[in-house]
Amino acid sequence: MIMAKDVALRFGKRTLFDNVNIKFTEGNCYGLIGANGSGKSTFLKVLSREIDTTSGDIITNNKERISTLKQDHNLYNDLKVIDVVIMGNSKLYEIMKKKEELYCKADFTDKDGILLGNLESEFAEMNGWQAESDAAILLVGLGVDISYHELLMKDVPNAIKVKVLLAQALFGNPDILLLDEPTNGLDIEAKMWLEEFLINFENTVIVVSHDRHFLNKVCTHIVDIDYERVTLFVGNYDFWRKSSELIQKQMKDSNAKKETKIKELQDFIARFSANASKSKQATSRKKVLEKIVLDDLKGSSRKYPYINFKEDKKLSKDVLTTKNLTISVNGVKVINNLNLNINNFDKIAFVGTNELAVTTLFKALVGEITPDSGEILWGASVNKSYFPKNHENEFKEDKRVLDWLINYSKIKEEQFVRGFLGRMLFSGEESLKSIKVLSGGEKVRCMLSKMMLSGANLLILDEPTNHLDIETITSLNTGLIEFDGVVLFRTHDHEFIQTLANRIIEFKEDGKYIDKMTTYDEYLEIKERL
Image 1 (cartoon, rainbow, N blue to C red):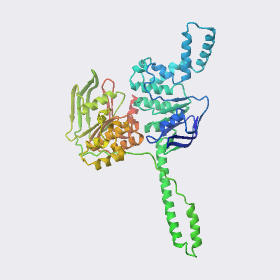
Image 2 (cartoon, rainbow, N blue to C red):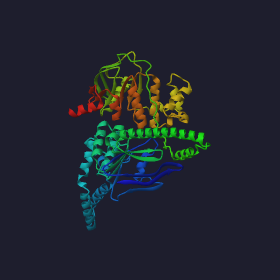
Image 3 (cartoon, rainbow, N blue to C red):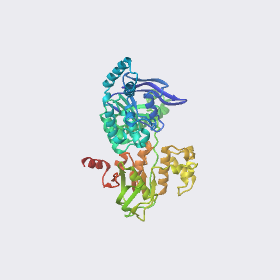
């Protein structure tokens, strides 16, 4: 159990939270949501006591252990992977190290022997002899091969470091688990494993995530942070969205009825207050009028960009064919004898752990790399636009956002491009910022703006949902569903794939592939049966 009592947090004149009273109980998973900058990650740090409250208290039972997901991937560079996971239970790890020191001590004394005996007893009570085995089970579950377990953290890829730090947070059955964006950088398989782990976790979980499917799968409650308010809802993300929309609608409808009633009363009072025969009725209506209170319809800090892809011309039947396509990277085949025929109605999700193969294929399709052998045949009507996984080269010059986007617009009028940027949440001065100082999410919105202005009828997107908040992901998801052209894409967002794709392609590690005309959930069911 962890509780915030009368908590407020202020930075200078800015109030992030005020008068927060909320209790998180065991057996439940709470999804913490809110717009970018609303204070989700900060609230987790307040709960973990990394940040002090301005006023109010964070209350936990004294013996309960809080575990948090570390964000610095280079924090443990000189430690072994398996040890980093065990460090999730700092007390157990400290006992292990003290034991090692005593066993290595040359001048071992009777006092040391008593201390060692006490440490061994405490170690056994904490199930320390199972520590390495428990850590290994978490790592393997997240897809970290056993060959990595004894390596130093500095010698493993970043994708593995992400999983190691997550395993560290999960290790040792913590009483309170605080996870800030735990699905970032996870492949679909690791994400599914994490979902099952949290569903079966019996203690308290509080998680920040922009993954709608993940929040729906694991959360029993949603905590919404919006305009200094922290509001608790029972249910998962979809239930919160529908219920909050319903509440807003009911309040608006109620206010509309009240406003009509107020107008009627005001008209009657204005007409008859000076009329002796009607004065009592007018006075009575004044009293009724004074009692009518409109519901406080506070706005939301959430902002949804307007994402709408319109092709300049329709695709003909012939779109894209690859014949015996083979591509190597550093002498290793990542795509082996690929034969695809893309239909003019296809929206294809490329899934699986072989991300290099997908990125390599996309680069070959747009002419950035040359295949070893085989053919890429484009239809005459195709006009393609590409969202690369790494798009930093687009933002190296010191240009204003407005000037950068004008380069890609057929209409060169500044007013038109300003209006376009406004719909993509670059309003006013935001459009005059240098592209060099943009955040990751802002750069993605710029790239999507460029693609929308292209008028393309075939879109290639390599992990476009990275760096985006739920609102922008939702808008992009909807925009692509409504798009009449072809979409070839890769993302780790389950809901995005399930709602958009009509066809799934998965590359295996040897470069071979599976190609199924099906939804994503159906594809996963097929894989489970194999």
